[in-house]
Image (tube, rainbow, N blue to C red):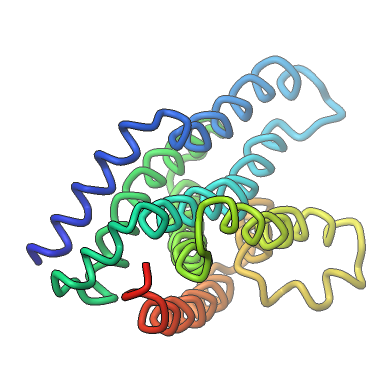
Length: 231
């Protein structure tokens, strides 16, 4: 528990020292707010929450994934990961420490999206639940990608195509049935399905997202054991 707390505090300090790292947590909800207030509202041709669902999906699958990847690759580049491993920090402790801070921060963003969308009761619960589970998936995948990268530049290059796949493919699938036939396995596709139709069941989407988290967790553990001492 002490190791998790130490990594958590370290991650919080690292991000607070670098305001740019916090931009994804601010930009997407702000864009959703202004586009909703000044474009969607009062326009009968646009769904009132179109920008909320769009920005929420991109944040979960694109912005958050990049933030997690950058956090880990920074540890590798500065050699702090090596010291953590030598100090006896286990893979799950590192994952929970770094991921815990990102997850809590993402929770505030998810709640902000829900408030901007004016969701209440069961709709807010569904929205928040699917966003938080999606955040877990993105954070875990981002950490795994960061672990596999030699430095921040390499991590950015590797993360970008993955983030584009998970962040934007679900939106494309709405307009292309062929793409939709195979993108259902992506956790971001399940987020998109729920936030665009609260009448749909939430159990299946959550199970698919959990399956994604399991795969990403295994990837992280393999990467940590392979490269941890080389960080």
